[in-house]
Image (cartoon, rainbow, N blue to C red; front, side):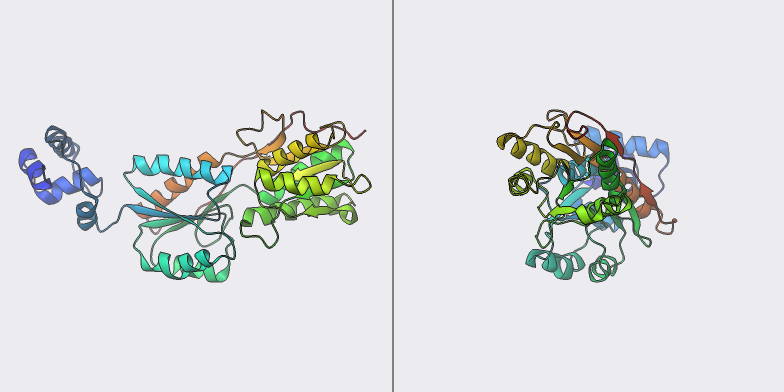
Length: 334
């Protein structure tokens, strides 16, 4: 098996120069880098991560913490993050940290402070004072996804505005009995973005003078949970809303399935709007607010790489685009 010394000897450079050329860290002329890369290819040399860490002072590992890995948004974001990390030859260590769980406390209090990572990406984590302190007390960069934070780099859609636009769309159609499914009050799968979307729904209802008619059915952000909550919400004809805003598309799709099972026609008897533009949204003709989590994951890694290269750069706060996509799940009430 070839070593970095073999590559250096073949390229006619020192081991330190060969290491810099292959790691991409530190200045190496283009001609030297080309010779080293050619030598490594000829010798079928693959850098060992431990050796690279010793040479560069970095672990080449990024920690990602998220409240869930089962929801479409989080899995798409992770896929995007991994794409760019692989381009930079970085590893990803993932921690699922449900709200109010023992695992979450252990990860924030013990695991993250006690392990070496070059940086961290926090996804959908409520920026509470204690957890923020745990993330930032070690000298390494952090990027927040899902909430905009002043003293670290962050990227998000405006979750409150997204849910408000979804609610306003239904109000503009003439609905006054509009319910919200989600928010996950007191459950372990809630995220900061979910709470912000609930706030957006309430603010739109209040602004339209419909605050007293607001109905909220807490539910985790999944199709089964949306289905279960919708069955309870829609089962009573006297209190049944004419429209529903789902905290995410998975909840909204679960609501559509529940309505069909109950014999409630969508959209003539019930309009449904979600947030995300899930991969199945088109299949269910779901009106939704489109966001692009895969691109958010890519951009989060790019922000982290920029921070690693320039620790003193100005903080970035990026608000990504979201737009209303009208399909056939929403219409004026009968």
